[in-house]
Length: 463
Length: 121
Image (cartoon, rainbow over all chains, first blue to last red; front, side):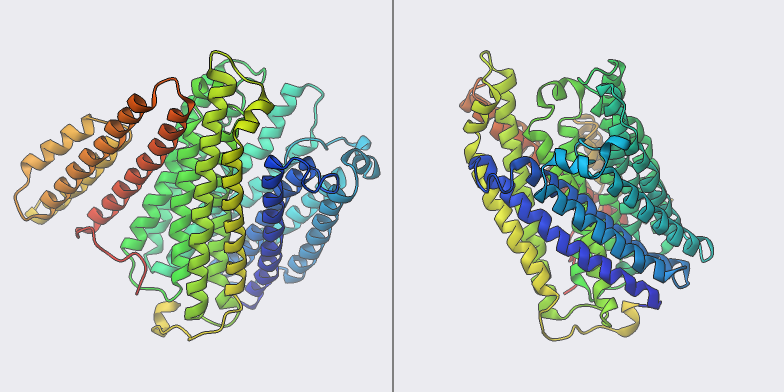
């Protein structure tokens, strides 16, 4: 670790992992509620568990992105962080606000939470993924602005590289697009437009910039390939991500009351959306093939390659699977969407944060790489989590296909709940895969504490 | 262009055509691959990648088309379980072939054969 202020990332990463555990615990709880509807009812109803599962995902990924930026930017900018105290202060504000919001979801009925937080003054609650009380949303904006200011000033007063500028663009976009969550029109169709301006432009727009820059940074470090080569890839990838992703938002406007031209625009542009993810795979394979050194942190290399492959599968392939309007006519809002959502979030964003943690955590603990035992355990946890996520995706795809057929395609369509009963076998198997994922996550956490033989490496190679 | 450069270019073209055959240009990519093969000589890197490309394409053809058709014929067009199997099978197998072809393309850029350990020992 070259700069002391990079160490701030550690507290963000620890919080991210703790919230990740919470997210998965609520995930397996919900998984069980799919087949045992009254499990933990009325203490944790399905709607509250789902809200906590998705909100924790967003919050811990934001912690992960912030931690990654605090680690990456000083090194790229070749200077200490502009205001380390601000980063520490914002960490605590974000953690406390996030914690209180989750407790609010769990302890108070949602309508009462809206009353308590004076949602009527500026109504923003009640929309999927953006359920946070208005006061929490204001808190998120303050934290995001302080974070972007801190990172921005560090970049602008230091060395400017393609990596930190692309990252900064992504982070500014993340902060700006969240502002659409404050507009909540009465017209439901109009509301959906603005809702997707946050959700879609995050996950299929600016987050891809963040992901690509983090991946590029780690690949430079672990392969020793020339920065110029990696920067060229980065330019092409982010160009393709924005060209396809911005208008590709049209695939969310099918069948919601929006004009029919979105079916063409959404289909054509979102058919291009796998391209940047495919290019990331090509990029990662290519630089690992051309590597100039074998980095001692094998786990980080594996996470980096895994990110590229799983993002391509989850976001690219599974996204394309149901993005064309004639297909989406049948699959809209079925378990096919859930299959895509699970693998895309895991492959693109969870894995890139874990890649950064895997690369940076040993450095922040004063080592070049984790010891041999720890790396073995981490690699095992990689396979447990990744393969169980593949299983979850395949099982949800199977459930979704069956659901489409029975509920929407057959000559005598069955009602929703009858179909859900018929999908029980897939949900049980998905629950088993979810428990394996949770075990993999515990193993991942344990790997940080495992003792073992230190790795051997040539000192200058690992810089 | 000297012989080595020409061979490297043909090797890369073969890998790219194999990838295109699996994605945007099925059949056309394969015809292109056969054309590149006809230009190569035995025991050269371009012949190696042309053969890898042809084998990948044929294997993918059997795995994706033949197996899928067999499942539909045996399972029945009107059975939901047939489509559950076909969708899951086709997507995962197709994606696996694309990933393999991508790896092949990146290896062809280095001018070396396929085998290289991804992670260090």
